[in-house]
Length: 321
Ligand SMILES: [Zn+2]
Image (cartoon, rainbow, N blue to C red; front, top):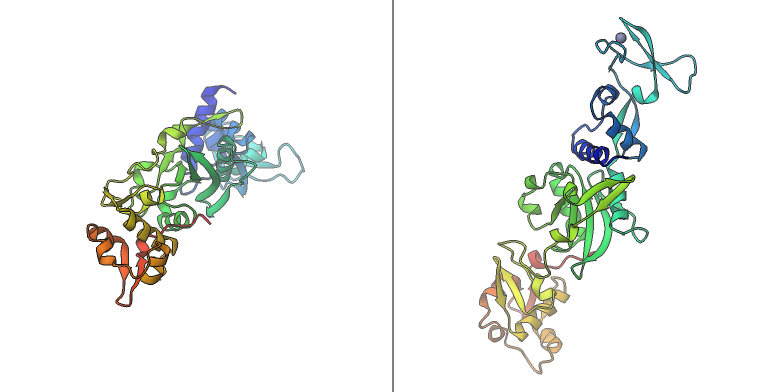
């Protein structure tokens, strides 16, 4: 199959899966200039015939009259339908000339799984039905990443945000998408990495070839968002916190204190337990530990008057489970 047809086919497929009604009327295929691309997509399983018969198809003989295909009373495997044209009479129709065509976005997810060498360890799993698939995990830039494929994400921002929160800690996700990435600047998804499918993939030999994905993945520990406030760097083994995008160096004691709270996933921890975990004999003076890190304490740590401390919910790590 010529590269030009593959390129047209991928372009059409990416466009189709972003439509609110992605079904295609059969006459649009044979009368359009992309017929070869559509037939190729059907051969490789990215487009299938739906079980719905179109309610109006252009007559291919005169290209002016429109009729509604009906089942052929005489069983004919090649032409199971026909339609009556006022000009041309009965026109025999193949199934593909009567049924609506429908793209299969799950096929893109499977192709990506193969192209990214995630199969056979992983099978794409729907994370948001019909919108987001979890493809699997792989190391990029010496760090484990969770890979996704998404389409029509703009119409499902909240479910996508929730699914990502459940499945991938910020900074570990790579979401390959057909959705126009420039429309995904919603605050709820601002800290997620979206990569346009067409920027990294080509259709070749009935599947996808992925190139250059690594170029889109930020270097380990580099600040991805100008306003990020998180303990991401601490979790990467650096003695730093991020507040409003600013890297703040932490003392070993502060690191150890925050790590203990982090390990308790937001549960309250008594300072006596913190002291033991830090290997300190006797009581610890929390105010003293955070003397030079007041802002870090106020940002990340909650406390009560009974000597309990906890990590504020906004800054908890998210398990990949
Ligand atoms: Zn006709």
